[in-house]
Image 1 (tube, rainbow, N blue to C red):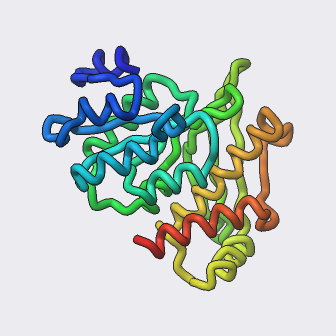
Image 2: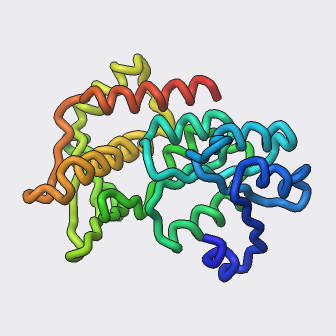
Length: 232
C-alpha cells in the first residue's frame, strides 16, 4: 500500500500499531488522510478513528477490512470514517478510494458514502462493477447490468429488481422516499451480487438474478441504512 500510494505522488508515513499511529499523527495538521485496518491487536481501527477524531473532528479516515459486510462498514462510517474499503482490493481500487476521500466534502453524510457506486468489489477472487442501469418504462422494473471478472474471464450479470419489490422496500421503511433515491435500489442490487458471489462462488448459469423477496439479509441491510440516514 505504501508503495502504491508513494508511486501515485503521496507522501506516506506508516505505523505498526494504533499508539504509534497516534504518535505520528500528532494534531493532524500535516495529514490529509488516515488509513487504518479495522481489526488490529491492542487498538481496533474504530478505536483509533475515535482518538483521531477527538484531536481533529475534521480528520478524514479510511477504514479497510478483510471481514464483515455492510454492518462493519456502517459502524465505521457512522462513527466518523469517510469511507470503507473491503480487502482484497487492487492498487487501482486503493488509489481511487484515497483520491475520492481526499477530494470529498467532509460534510457528505455516511449514508451517501455507503450508497456510492461500489466499483470493483472483490468477493471470493472475483470482482464486479456496475456498468449500467435501465428502468422498464412499462412495468418500472430496474435492471442493473454488472460485469463480473473472474480468474477464467469476464461475464455479464443482470440483476432485476421488479417494481413490486421497490414498493415492498418503501412499505418496509414506511416511506415513499428512500435514502439516496434510486441509488438505494442500485446498492441493494450490488449487495445481491456480493451475496451471490459469496454463496455460489460465481455467476449463476442463467446470467440473471431476479430479486423476488425481501430476505432477512436484505431487511437487515435496509434497517442499517435507514438508521444511519435518520442519524444524519
